[in-house]
Each structure stands twice: as structure tokens, then as C-alpha cells.
Amino acid sequence: MDKVADIGRDIGSYIRQQRSSAKISLRQLSKLAGVSNPYLSQIERGVRKPSAEILQQIAKGLRISAEALYVQAGILDDLPAGGPVLDAIRADTELSERQKTVLLDIYESFRRQNRDETTPGTEPEQSHAEE
Image 1 (spheres, rainbow, N blue to C red):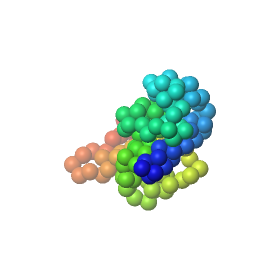
Image 2: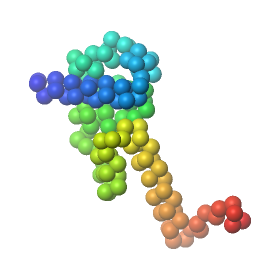
Image 3: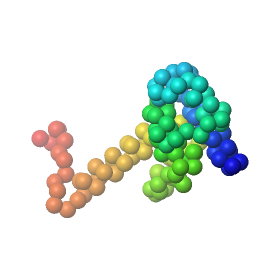
């Protein structure tokens, strides 16, 4: 039972940290996430352990990855692996979760574009300058 209480405190402090770094008040986040102000306060203080659905709503309100909250809450074991670049971005403590998500999205879009350009039987996209 103590482990569950620890996880609740950990996720609560993580949410509070993310909210503070995003400069969002508790009231603003409760409105953005569609969660009552008292309930969100209880989550942040570790009194309540939120469900995966509530975590998803909070993540949306904070504009961060729901998976990051799931990991913090103990719902997921760890974020999926993806190589040294992805691991480095995820491990960087100086980036917010929102910044990490944006970097990961950009990185993956570049990789996808490069895969598409080098796939046999497909033509690389031409830029407008070449037309």
C-alpha cells in the first residue's frame, strides 16, 4: 500500500512541476483538463491516484505526452525505446515534456521523410524550385 501512496505522490509532484514550468495555475489546468479544481489539488498533493483517463486529460491540458504521465504513474513500465537520439532527448532533464515531444515529433518526421525518399520504387519529392 505504501508503494501506491508513493506513486500517487510522485505523479502529483510531477504534474505540479510540469504545471509550474508551463506557468499554468491549478485553476487554469483544472479547466483545460476538464477536472475539478479540488480533485486536481488532491492529485498534486498525492492524496488521490488518477486513472489513465484523467492522466490523459491532464496531459492534454499541460500539452505534454500522456505516455510520460503514464510512466510517472506506474501505468507504463517505460517509454518505448527508439535509439540513442530519442533516448537522449527523453533523458534530457533541462527540457520540458512539451519541448521533448516537439523535438521527437520533428525528428521522426525527418526520419520518415528520408525513408520515403530512399524507398525503392518511389520517386523522391521534388521541391518547387526544381519544377
